[in-house]
Length: 71
Image (tube, rainbow, N blue to C red):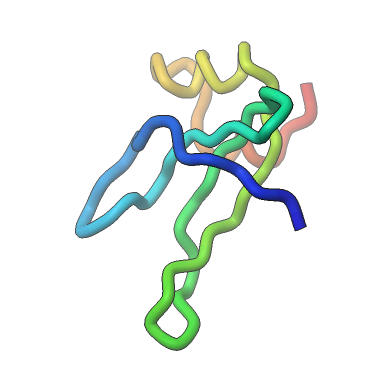
């Protein structure tokens, strides 16, 4: 399992729903809240290219495309 560190909340609704994260060597990730288990939040985390993450932040790339499409 890889450890990532929260860097910026992108969508907040009663808690972080979507956020950016980085790993120890500087990799970029997007995390999306999924079904909690035993009242603990769980996130789907996917590595993303910095440019695609930037496009998502400015609204020229949607979340589905960010998670599914390969550049």
